[in-house]
Image (cartoon, rainbow, N blue to C red; front, top):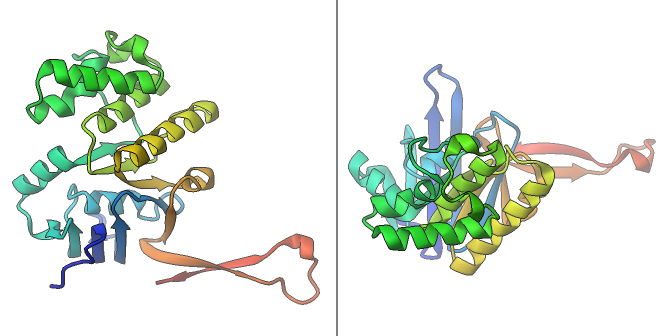
Length: 249
């Protein structure tokens, strides 16, 4: 077992995973993520993006392969240790806004901090700051059922950012939002990540979202691929554009 490069906050080697129905989720995926980098994981739906994020975060143990966080092997951790790592160092945003119905908005946003042991007043201050940045500060005392779908997703994003995680895993984080809301939330997310030195691993099938990242890796059928653009065949009009093919690596 060889330790990863020192400048990679996350590093994965030869990850393999199969779903319960036997279909492949990942087939030998390897990658590194540098500290403070925003990395987009692109590809169509069903390509393995969510599975990769879950394996990198320790939510889903890979069937084989290695995952390292700050040169510590996540793949050898116990379930309890992985849970503590996720609680203390990682943030997660799902495509669907999942909130605790019994808590109001600021309590939902502050929940990860309070679970870490942060005092209620300090946790509330951090939560309110992020709710304001996401333009939903006026909803702080409402409950989830009083919010629109887009507002609930913004609360989930505030909840993920409030604890200032080392790594934020964002699985199609703006999927429920309209185009204008999506652009604003993505700017807030990327600006916050850069200003706070948060590493972001962002799963998306949207090219405009991926363009905000420092770098993009692409998946297809659970494998990393590179897209090569080939010149048009002889006799074809230039306006037909370039042909493209994907190569697994």
